[in-house]
Structure formats: structure tokens, C-alpha cells
Length: 154
Image (cartoon, rainbow, N blue to C red; front, side, top):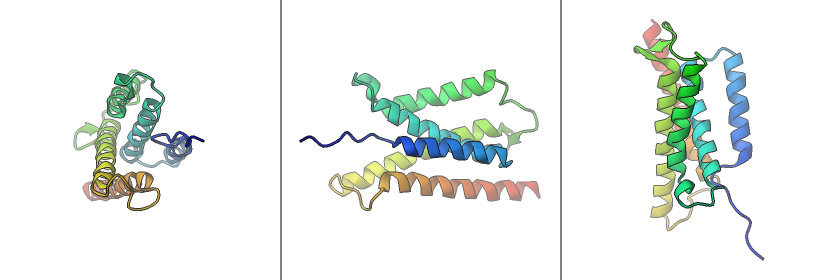
């Protein structure tokens, strides 16, 4: 009788990103690149988490994303996973830089998705738009930074 509840981010996507990050780290992929996707995972979890909140004030996915960002940076700092002298990109810790870049890119992707929906009378242009837009933007960002890091190493 009633349509099923639709969550902001699907749990399967969240688990897939988390597993992919674990594998990437074990394969030796650079911390900056892994951190970009870590921040995307944080954003997905934050919006998914916000969808469960009953209180309107706590239902803000953007607010939860900011809270998760600082919680992640704090946790990584206190567990001594950031702050290593030689693990930097342009003088900034790679994990902090990647997490910040991923945070900004994820929010930009969400805003782009919402703008497209507004311009299209609340409808998506294509199936899985909410997944494809962040994925493509994050992938392009990762590739750009991968090439920048290779260029800097020369």
C-alpha cells in the first residue's frame, strides 16, 4: 500500500567502498588516493546515518558529514596514522590532504546531483545518477592526483 523507504546511500555501496579501501591499502596504493575514497565512504555513511534520524535537526546529512570528517581526522591523529614526516603531499600529510579533497569532492558531487534534479523537475536524468555522479567525479579526481604525484616524483 505504501512505497518502501528509500535511503540516501545504499548499505551495499557503503560496504563495497569499505572493502575496496581495505584491499587498496593492502595492495600498497598511496595514502592520498585511498584517503580520497575514505572520505567518500564517510560522506555516504553520514548521509545514510542521517536518514535514520527522527529529529529534523539531526537529519542533516551535510552536518553529519562535517562531524564524521572531524571524527575521522581526530581518530587518525590519536592513533598516530597521520603526522608522519615523510608521508606528505606538497607539505601536507597525505591522509589529511586526501580526506579533505574527498570531503569536498563528495559534497560537490551531491550538490551537482541535486542541481540536476532541480533542473529536471525533481527527476534523475539516468538510472543510478546518485551513484554514478559521485563515482565518476571521485574516479577523475583520483586519476588527476595520481598523475600529479607521478609528475612531482620525477
